[in-house]
Amino acid sequence: MKKIGIIGGVSWHSTSQYYSVINQTINNITQGKNLPECMIHSVDFTKIEKLQESDNWKEITKLFIEIAKKLEDYGVDIIIMSSNTCHKVYKAVQKEIKVPIFHIVDPTAEKIKKLGMKKVGLLGTRFIMEEEFYKDRLLKNHDIRAIVPGMNERNYVHKLIFRDLALGKSSQEDKDKLKKIVDAMVERGAEGIILGCTELNMVIKQLHYDIPIFDTAVIHAKATAVLALED
Image 1 (cartoon, rainbow, N blue to C red):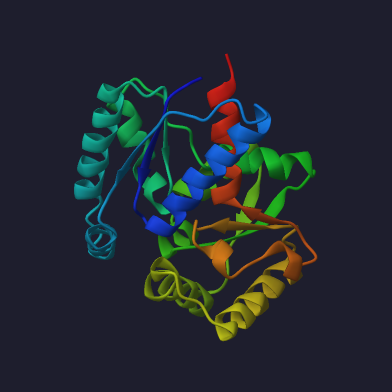
Image 2: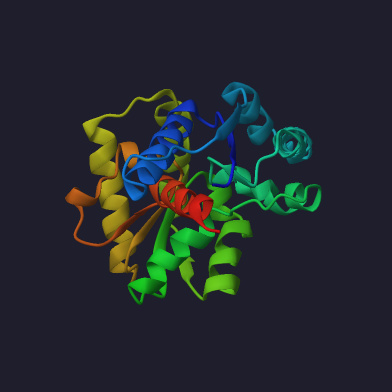
């Protein structure tokens, strides 16, 4: 079985979910016979948040390269980042190491393509919704077009993620507001919704929606487990 390296802490809630889902998936596939060897290196969420808000991606890149090299030295065979937004530094980090980083977009896109979808709504931090690194991979690598909410709604979602969800907090008011944002994207032609933040599954659940909700955290973790079991 391949050893898994996880760059976590952004936030710890999603990191714990990754660890749980990876172990559960491998345990289920092997009928309780095996569990993976994992190495988790968590970062300080507050430090990353401040660097992101000051647009200091150079320092984030440097930090993630250092962590990835440590995981590589440990002997991991796969590295994953338990954060959608931090995939902004994916290319720069991958260039500096030999171990493959399993990109969060790819298993999510495979799920979308299996349903024959070409246009989806995308929710996440403002970096995910407003910059091109995430949407470009969906379009260029998988022929999937992502649409995002309007500016006011994007600001709301971004603040919600950092103000509440990263701390494990949510409210019914937030759930209702997000439902309206999703409904508006559906009216614009979204066939499904990508939760482009690994904390959004706290407030957006499939059972409350008639269209497919693509929970990137769970999809990525399960796909990592399967990849770890491949020869």
